[in-house]
Length: 253
Image (cartoon, rainbow, N blue to C red; front, top):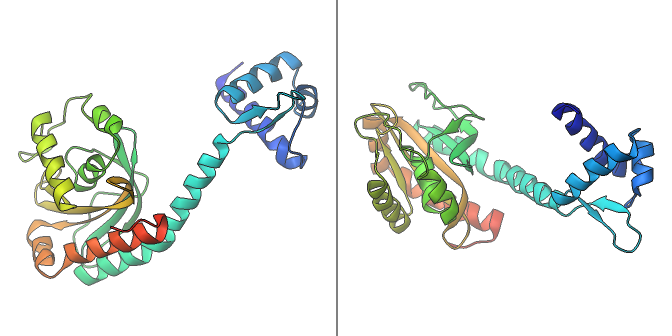
């Protein structure tokens, strides 16, 4: 069976619980409704059960949707709430300081931009929603590394640190020292480490003690953004971080 066909059939099984508006279905019922032979249905359901997407009632052997789906649902709800709360504030920051602002989240050994507000009357920053970024040389990447579980940190160190500019950190020792400084200050910087002439600053959105799955950043021409620092950009970003952490996660910094 082709992988794409297996995937389609697996989703067709999950869809049955919605279309039939039932909480439980037997293997025979699933095979019949999905128009699958029993051996194919059994194999797919066994995999879905192992993944936690389906669960089986030990009393009647019937299947129902698994709790793993609640994890996805909760993540989507948090991300929707994050966008609703954060986007207007990213707009305000961008307009006030004329810098490009972002919202991003950790994804494996990289991060992904999930929102961007481009600065008006400024240079174009080569970032976009959906684009992945490196962890070791970007302000947002280092910010997420500093406040992520140790497993993610080890994953980041599993490959050589790519040199992007003359300022890029390329050794584990240097990066660990910088991460410790970020944890102390609550702010991370990209000091022309990704692109010559481009400076970036980032702060975390905390979900718990020293834990952050999301971060916001502001980027711009080095000379310009340093003026923004003196005008209060970092303080405003920290205030945004504080309010978002409280609103979304009920966590007070």
